[in-house]
Image (cartoon, rainbow, N blue to C red):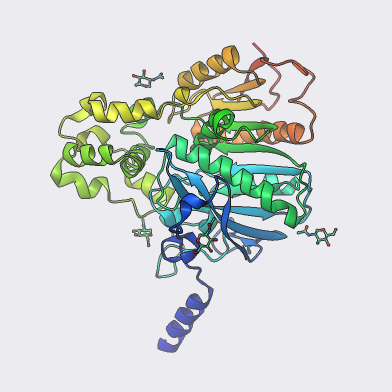
Length: 432
Ligand SMILES: *[C@@H]1O[C@H](CO)[C@@H](O)[C@H](O)[C@H]1NC(C)=O
Ligand SMILES: *[C@@H]1O[C@H](CO)[C@@H](O)[C@H](O)[C@H]1NC(C)=O
Ligand SMILES: *[C@@H]1O[C@H](CO)[C@@H](O)[C@H](O)[C@H]1NC(C)=O
Ligand SMILES: *[C@@H]1O[C@H](CO)[C@@H](O)[C@H](O)[C@H]1NC(C)=O
């Protein structure tokens, strides 16, 4: 028995990967300001295997996996480091690159996709890959669908090595700089220097992609995207928190506030004084866990009940100022073409927020906007049902075929809104 356990332990030591919190690859160099945004600080090649869908399954095999620590810019404009992973599929098409941002929604850097995507990653020292801390990202299905197309994929740890969730400017900058890294270093792995590139993200990943699309004209005018697919968007964190409170997704409210406290010292100070003393440890209790653990830990809880002043806290000046600054509307108008999809019954971010944002883009933007409102779908079903149209749209824009169907080709500022039901996939059935 002891020998058996010892063997297991030794095997585990031999195979376990070092998580980011203990891995010097992620350390920011002292001379970080000497690097340009999107410049690689260090690179490494890791084994070409991704975590399987199920804990005991065989790994997903790809042709190559390369990782980069690169310079990006935090929400206050300071130089910081972030990591990104370049995935090269077996049937790699050197003319196409997708920046896919995962919904890792975490307060722990050990949930970063550069780690959790890798075969052998695990967060529990006892070796069990239990659900709350599973390192199989739920985005794997969408990543696999994209790899199957032959697309090179760059996916970033857009929360940075300090895991700041829901911080718009940081996430946008880190996403844009990861694309610069891929365009600079991809060619040494056969990516064409004239490859087309686009972005895709859902939920937390959409937060990164939507901020990247909005900030691109000012932060990365050197980049020319073929477009961005954005699903399950959260344009307004305040209304999202109000919507999820006491429901199945109320855990996200805690993750958002902890993220804000990491990014804004004034918010951290305010939070410390605003929370009820005896509930502080419960408030921060799940911050070491990945998305399922965090979300299930806060499920059904009354978020406002943790504050001395209850629901009124979001109207206090410090949190209101920070939350206003994190509204996507303030980030600018994207110039690239967009494919936006949203479940009409989304229970995390009300569809009205996305309707309003898209209307503004339609009126003021120069790119084409295609907006699919999926009737009968909520946040989770919307991720799955909307992905089919997103992949089709990405296929067209990455092939240089425009955004499809000839509608609006060659014109700018064209906006197509359509609505389809969750039970049929003919997205053109009801254009309004
Ligand atoms: C930063 O410092 C390291 C270690 O001294 C050095 O190797 C590297 O070239 C420096 N980077 C830049 C961009 O100056
Ligand atoms: C790059 O192209 C060369 C020549 O076609 C090929 O031998 C090599 O395997 C390719 N490498 C990758 C990573 O695609
Ligand atoms: C965001 O939501 C809050 C709360 O519902 C609301 O007061 C605020 O006006 C919203 N902001 C925008 C830009 O719609
Ligand atoms: C997840 O793993 C982290 C790091 O080992 C640990 O702190 C946390 O308690 C774990 N969460 C759960 C729900 O097991």
